[in-house]
Image 1: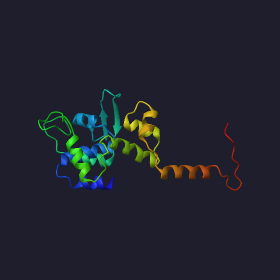
Image 2: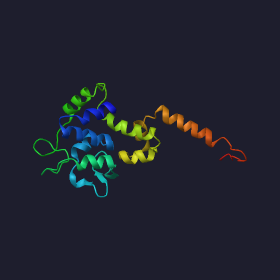
Image 3: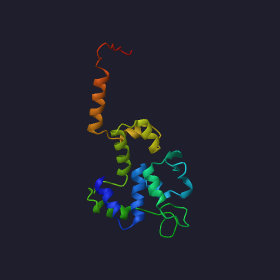
Length: 179
């Protein structure tokens, strides 16, 4: 993430860097970023509405970091946040992603969709609930989110440590077995 962020900070095409940052900070699918229009963003309320035929539409909250990225994107006459060269929908992001990935020295096996997995994994590994991450990703089921959220060793250790603390009676405390 550090190498990717440093690459984006110095990337010559701000539009491509913004495209990646939107995906990194929301976990949105590439198709959702391609279709993202300004009328779906409410910076005052810090929300974004996603419409995708694959899923139900959903309104998700925006982080301060993403609001900053969006606020710094120059709006044009195009309705799209990241428009194509003609102002219409951008058709693909394959070549910019390959160039950014190569410059950041990321392995070729890391696909753009990996940003979505990374979003989920970082959140779950830092204590966010699978349910909340599922809502942020607009998944239909927790099972889908579970495939995305690769639990890191640190989070697993913290969970086991917490279990040890909760299940070890303190002086004078009685623990009851839950049936």
